[in-house]
Image (cartoon, rainbow, N blue to C red; front, side, top):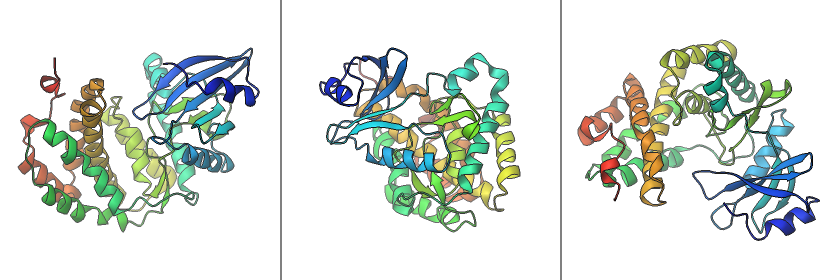
Length: 328
């Protein structure tokens, strides 16, 4: 990755004029990240180019999380017109890589991540839009918009919407509190950092936060699109969340509904990343996503949606990575 041409001047204005700029990462969006090194100082440069990206939600939510005592990156400098933000560097130790090296630490690390969520869910939501029916439906609809055409399926799109309309009230009318939903809370977006604050966990990639049901981020963590979380670990961590957060009796059903909604969305997104954005590597995640979705659909609360899938997407159109559809 080549840094944007405006980066040197931006860094000079921020007091980092002599810093080296080293590629760090890209993600599934248009955002790119670079490590900025100046002697013993390190920071991260976020390149969020307009009009594709707007860094203001990230900045606002980071400042909100910091105010509430969570470890979000501090904002060191910003140029909103250029889409450049200099942020605190949390290092390189993500939960994902840590557990690859220390698999025996899995339960302990996930328990810390659950405890952080429980702390977040005790607080009123931030000033973010609601996770409402329109958003749920738009996201779930990515499956019929992208996956189904990619595998040559002509499905009942109106019946799909109606099936979700039948199950989403369970989430919307839940007795659970409305909380800040980070929406991408998983092992690649949670950093292990020094200190005891916020359970020693640093938060990333929360710019799309909404106000919604507390089960969503639990699903994001425990039904990880990019990492296999053993079923036994998922069950143990749900039990741990219940022990520390005391959610209402409808929590398991809401967890299943939101799991199915999120996994259907991700199947659509990963197909879109291949078809539209030329990133076929995301196809390798689809078998995991179908397995997770089918587990959620087995819950009785998902009966209308499960019936739609049984009718419209046969089993032989699911457990595949679409590799046969990738052009030579």
